[in-house]
Image 1: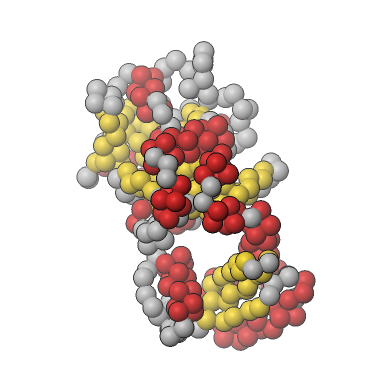
Image 2: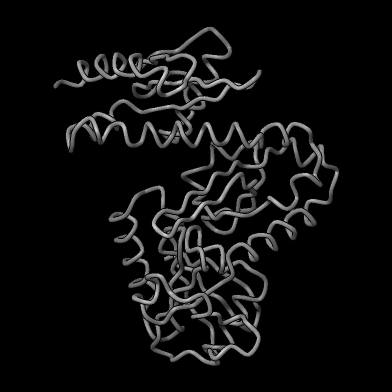
Length: 334
């Protein structure tokens, strides 16, 4: 089936499943389209930023949008037609329906939880226990972050989020969340550093830090294994040749563990020296004691991993050095 024929057939199938999928209406936005309608133009701009990482008033790619409604609230599920077509070519229609059904289900849950309503009420006390922090690559997300709360650290950003739901059945870990709008921070009238400290504390509680000496240890480890920040931890030092992995008990977005209070300093104490940090993805960081490897070799491995894995998991393209004497994280220009 050719690409254009696939798009037509997909729209037909979505119309046939309208009641089953419980969406309100469907819209097709064609590659190269623009609009004089303010709402449609906003959708085009947001779609380009979200999926193409570019700012443009002309749509890049073909998209199908399903609209869901609850009371007066509207929620959109956007689908890149080419990505769905590639799934179809690799498998069958079943491979196409999987991401569609997952997105619709997540969107429905999000609306039912009423997080957007809580945000619009601008009541900090209702949201403060739901705040958490995620690490992202700045270049890949710079456009979508313009109206949200974040802190830059080298080529990375720590982004303030609101947790809607966190479900883990042992096989699949689903997290629904939304970035905190800058307008919310202004409306809360709370000191920004207080908000960040609270969010970091929440994140630590949700997912305590862990250090694993063997990559195999990352596969379903016992809760207490690798608890190097715990009182009376049995991890009292790190071998100079060790290449430990730092993550969290949840592992998803586990690289945030490096930014927990006291973590970088404690690792320097365990190594007894400065050390290099390779953020090999949003889920983890790998460490090398200074002097045991050339930083250029670390950089080469980071670039190889970033080419191999899903681009959405890329966190950094740089090597970092933690200097124990200064207690500072330094980005290396190699």
